[in-house]
Amino acid sequence: MIPCWVQVSHFGFSPQMGSSDRLFNRQRTLHEILGGVKVADLILWRRKNQTMGILLVTLAVWIVFERSGYTLLSLVSNVFLLLIVILFLWAKSAAILNRPAPPLPQLHLSEELANEVTDFIRTRVNDLLSVSQDIALGKDSKLFLKVAAYLWLISIIGGFTDFLTLAYTSLFIVLTVPAIYERYEEYIDMYILKGYRKLCFLHVKIKEKYVSRVHNWILEKKKLS
Image 1 (tube, rainbow, N blue to C red):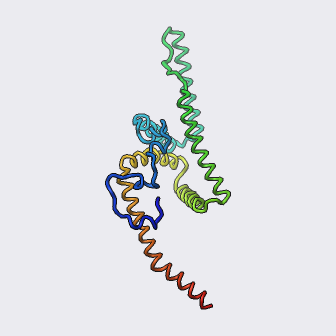
Image 2: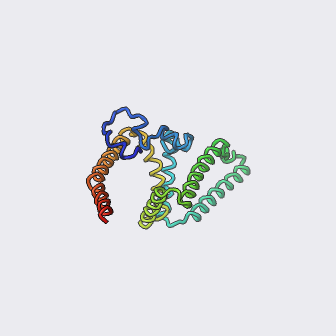
Image 3: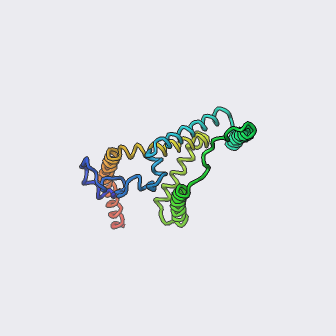
């Protein structure tokens, strides 16, 4: 965002928003910021069936964990055990009775999908490591305060819920909030920036009215002493 002293004289807003009216004056679209690949398509509901499938499957898993008391390891082990037993018996009985084998799809992960997921993870991990390095070396105090605030907030939220519920809620937010923001981007940016500019204007007024007086009073005290 533009600093407060630049913003205070600009309260007007045009319905057709340019890059200067976007949050953080960004030039790229949200899809490009998220990587512009299949992961971004999933998050922004460009692949509605797949995104809905992920939400429904994770919801089912969350319900199973919450109601049955299973742990992740025990549930995965039991599901795979049941699956391989069914497929094994099906294949054996089909061979004995001269029936077709189980109609399994080709179990193969495409190189393209693997590369896209790998690049997405690598980019995010490198960003995280870069931020961590800047904080560890004391290069950015504001960034340190932001990260500390976020971690403190996560710690508070974690005290009210378990990891599984937090993970599902986080996934739900990731798969809904960006899509809603992209759909109503102009209106959301407009109201956020309007509020930010009004806060900047209030900040300047307070600074002129009170902080400047205190500063002048301190200077006068120094001169008298």
